[in-house]
Image (tube, rainbow, N blue to C red; front, side, top):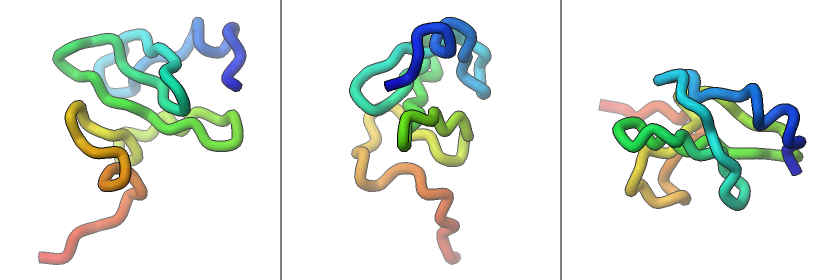
Length: 69
């Protein structure tokens, strides 16, 4: 569980808006951004490359894997 004191100071690294804990994700509260950041072992992973985009299925997002062209 992410501590409330930490939640109070965390912000989305992309748009700098506050985030809210929803399950095992921190969700950006800016509706234009809406990125969802994973929480692993009670540690928020606040990396844009690891975030899920709004509407993106959880199993396809994050991981930082590159796609070959």
